Length: 150
Image (spheres, rainbow, N blue to C red):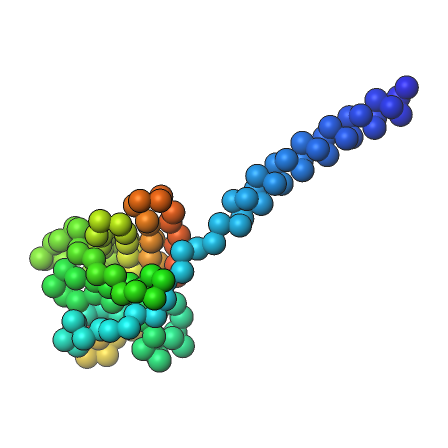
């Protein structure tokens, strides 16, 4: 009788854990929304902020996010360059910490650290991009490495 009760309890506990693992696993299967390499950056006229997914990509100028100093930014989603406008505009803001860009479908929050290096009028940053699809609610966070300047 004790063995039967023990087995029943064990089966119930294990099946409960399995259900929790499946729920957690579903959350784990969520893939980050892929940001791809931007096709064109000529809209910046050479002055702006350029961010990549790692320092090697930054050195190769393979950017996943670019913004100019005139409220425009671009990302590439599914092979298409998508333009966004800056939401929180502060003409006195020099540091680009916590800038938000959006269009009808996407919203981007760019958070950067203090510059870790500089050369003339160029500053190097690390940070993150929170990318959100406003229609589907999907979102993901990407680590970024970038440079801002002329």
